Image (cartoon, rainbow, N blue to C red):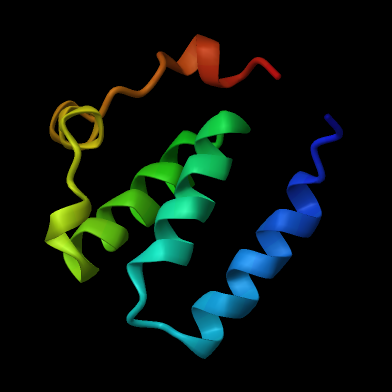
Length: 79
């Protein structure tokens, strides 16, 4: 499975511009940024998604957001 993160991010950003109040592209791009270890951007996007649609707050996401599970500075510098 080839991962085209740049292409996926571009598609999500296009949808976000067209549908700024839709939580789905914010959530999806947040998950993509999380997979890329772009922690701050991921956290901002996932927080925005939950503001737009509180129903998407799964236990895992809610826990991740409440505790801001971010790697240490040294771990962030890797990759």
